[in-house]
Image (cartoon, rainbow, N blue to C red; front, side, top):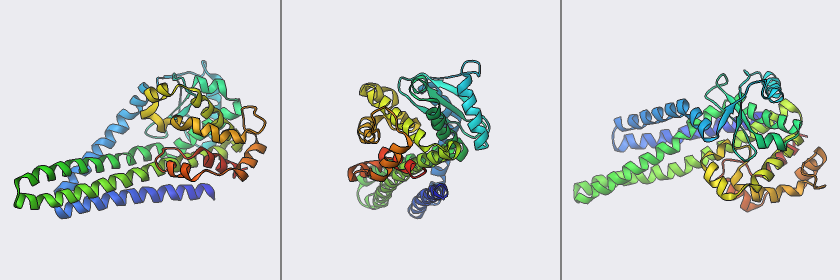
Length: 327
């Protein structure tokens, strides 16, 4: 039931986002003419096509991925094969990301072209069951096709900003002539203002969808492994490893790729402080009993919930609490 509700929320968010961009294009058609929205629709199509075809290669280069054979990583391949079979999807290509922070991620344009990658640091830090839970999360992204959804949706704020930029400067230069030119510039400036507001709103919706897809993948991992505490423990260790990394290294290597992390590395230090309350015996992991108590007692602060609105990832406390609800 919880999984179905997450799926509904994601679907409604997608519908809302396309309704918002449709309304903006309708406003442009009303004030400027019917041909102009078609131009922006073509731009959107071209940008989405470029992202779909070049996106995987950009991820491979940025995250320094090397694909490995079953002979090199037999246990990793075995886990991916078993989870893919349970999920009912083709086995994705398996790779190692040569970055210094513990992480796992999935990417690709479809179930058949999907790839799943982990870092060496992650494999060193996690126990087998924890790694399996993380892989279950990543394969759930593939099963839900949300990688393609978020790629397509991320184009909409870009188009809104382009509309704002082009109409704003058209209004500025058009208004310099005075008289009729100034009157003609007013609709331009009005459209620019509306486009900027829509850009801001659409960005928030895309971020919301990004957070929902993380909750959805967490639920998928629990369905595949039946071990929510192992995923909670893995997230705790991932956040710990990210928090120990040097801030300048995070900013330099990872700022543009935050959505490809199992937990947001930029907020890791604060998240670690919050989640350490779950580790009652200070053994560096979260067991089922600790998760149950944490889910009952912990609560994200109002400030954390507000900051979450501008994040690609759910608040760590809220995320682990939700995992506790699956016990």
